[in-house]
Amino acid sequence: MNRDPLQNLSLRHPAHFLALGFGSGLSPVAPGTMGTLVTLPLVCLLALTGLISYVLVTLVACVIGIWICGRTARDMGVHDHGAIVWDEVAGMLLTMIAVPVTGVTLLVGFVIFRVLDILKPWPISYLDKHVHGGAGIMADDILAGVMACLLMHLLMYLGWLPLPVA
Image (cartoon, rainbow, N blue to C red; front, top):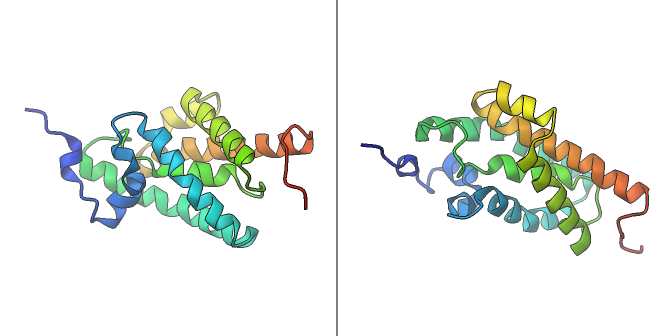
């Protein structure tokens, strides 16, 4: 008899609540996308605090994400279950570092990050296959977020991304 791994979790447990992206990972459709979407209001709020605060919170999300995701995966008895979406939260936060927040930049950042996260081009695919535990759950999305951030900055530099007028 196979038990549903989600039965081993509780949204009252802080690690589970965060690993499940505030509950968004429980979506029956595209939980990774839902985890990324739920991050957008957080990106907007953090952008108001300034770059240093944004980066510090993002770094904390990445570092504690290793423990959060590892703990939740152990409690579920499944490595990188689809409901664990804290890695998407961290990846989307990374994507938007030092990017002015507008509807367009949020949409473009969201799409770039999701494409990289889903397709997993090299070296993202290497990390996905060769790093295990909480670090393994987080590593590929952290790299996808860094690569997405670099692409966002390239698009801004080239003038292909409309930015707000100061």
